Length: 613
Figure 1 (cartoon, helix red, strand yellow):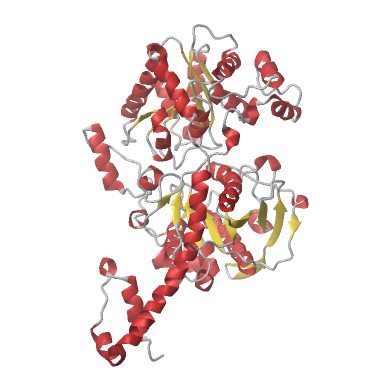
Figure 2 (cartoon, helix red, strand yellow; figure 1 turned 90 degrees about the horizontal axis):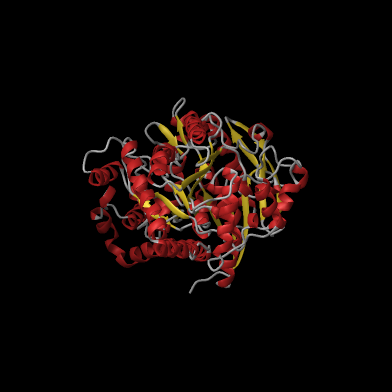
């Protein structure tokens, strides 16, 4: 068995989490994963007897305090539009031992801040991704790394800057966290000149890797280059064969999804959402699924936001009158006592439900209300506008149902802000049964999940899903759409299927049907509801299996390099056996093309053609 004693990994990502340190950012799930994954990988490697060292490579955004970072004396020249200039590089080792390498250039990154790290202008984004990944490539070449692990398209140019000579010996892998965003950049002045401008050969690379309906597509290019070099392309839910979850969805083209929607509705759908955004490379390459995990900190017995001491520290960092919770009783109880619990101590969860009701509605709960919750961003992906569509009919169906919603729209998102307005309007109409808050409050979000009975997740697409894990682990049963990674909680959730995104009324009905079933089970079949809670809280959401698969992927990268060498040796060994028949064989031997082609045949053909050189 091939098992290296030590592996040094360069892990490149635009987000790293660690927001509380003020030396990291988290816009979405990417940051949360990069914060947790390295430590889990190190533990998994240790179980296999491997010493794993990880350096996270990431941009140095303008709001970071560089006085807390250590500047490195390394030359990192990058070229943009024909001009060459140096990047600065810093390092920082966090208290948990994780080393992060930061890449900084004032011209490229001075505009960034804690809430703005992705340029809205695609041309500007291309240049920034180019210069940062050039600097990363220079750094990797100067250090003795054994493997490179890329996370999402923002760092997808890195293999091109590393170059074929480097990739011949250095395994590289690519994890896709969200295929909806692919780094698609409209052409300005032609594909050749655009690539030339970011220090790549347009003539050699544009048509082979980047061309996508007269745009540059960074995700497509990275996928093809990583596959060509023998690395693995993974996504964040499913199995290694891509049989379920997001890995399975990415295989499906428009026609296949349209046919599924037709069968589902019994009539032609108006419009369907295609997770791979019509990038047919997903349909031709096997994308492995390695499902994201969740740290043990998210279990209710460990959740920091349920421990009084942690809440006291959070409160101390705020103005005295700026309370974590608006209701005095909730504020006092949460900061005075721990509210950690597990599946054998659900009376504490019942107390959290009481405190949540006080917080949301200002009164003690009466006659066992059902608290239906939703926490998230009001963006198209999350589809939370659908929640507004089903509230009133749910209130009518069961007089004891109440909604508690914590969600906000990004600045400038008109559709999200319209959904905010709809929620505010409903909350004003039903102040005793609907609570809506568009503020950002982590302790409140954890109280909502821990104290709620059901959580709503009608996502348009969900590559992995973390809130479904977070809710399930605290006994808050998921009601949502069966998409992507959300299907992993199917045994303890109420999931509906719907693909026609143009038929909002039809989807709302499918969604409401599951809500109705959940409410009725709560009311009239309490043993079944309680068994769902037990199943949900018993979910194995740990990183153990996933981290082991990533370590195996790193080991596979080394084995694949050995296969490349063995394949080349096989070609030369065969040529030596045919002696005087080399000319005869060469004249007749013509490999097939495209789907009839064989890579090893073409390597043999190439070797025969160049025998005399």
